[in-house]
Image 1: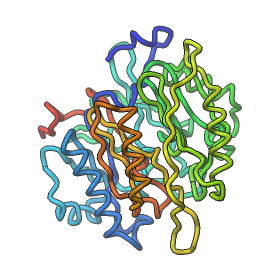
Image 2 (image 1 turned 60 degrees about the horizontal axis):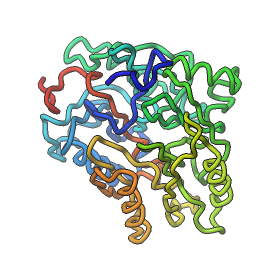
Image 3 (image 1 turned 30 degrees about the vertical axis):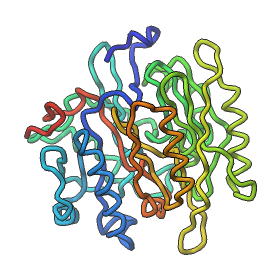
Image 4 (image 1 turned 180 degrees about the horizontal axis):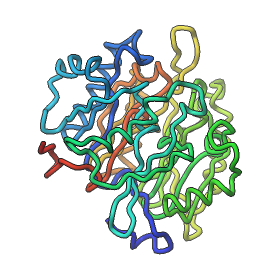
Length: 361
């Protein structure tokens, strides 16, 4: 990778569809919020791990005494799946995982502060995962230098990069007073520009899903794709409480422009039929929460055959060279997240001990 397409920046934040070394996940255990439905959660995570491992490496973290026996039951391929014993609060790797940038041909893994989505949930262990991975004396994990950004709260699910200097995000999340309340929009934009080499920052001021704990993470609403394309969640049924905010988001998306001043190619994803928890609370089910690997799209689905199939076909329009793999994420959505939320990719060269797509130590 090079920064030739981003000439005004010292840094470049790769797009998710570029080549990976591996994908990070944290395994569910008894001391996470999955405890009441642990078997279902682990089965869902296992499906995700196996789908990724067919193409590239997986790095699993968690406390060994609570995780290893259940991991062994799934017979993951040892040359593709590596486990590291680290304490965890929960399993949302997208939001505590390091974010990798390129700078003059070298890679850096940026370690931002994770404070439980604006102090909503405990994060004392998860905020230290990148530091602990970097401090391992044996079986070194990070090949790239870890860069400390723990003075700034940022979750990976709150930003989308096209790899060419454009970043898409939401104002509700990044301007949340419980994250970086001392900074306004201008200061945050300047920070992101320096950290990621961004010269084109796009803010969405609308879009929210019922039951969302993240304050409108962009990866639940709209995703960047190649060729100046944005996939976004459509308004759906007008009786759905999400409908009006998603309609306003669609209007704003139509007003966004590329670096060259052109409108984006907009592709609308369906809204799933409402999904509820046992208490009757609506959950933030979304087809936008997919993971892009170099050859595959892992798509969260919700046992809604017509909507699931439609979302799969639409993704093939934006990623015609990718195979779309549906993963049943009804378990994940019960904890208000989905597939993209539990994964974090690392570009080629960021992780040590991988050769030809396999762990070698």
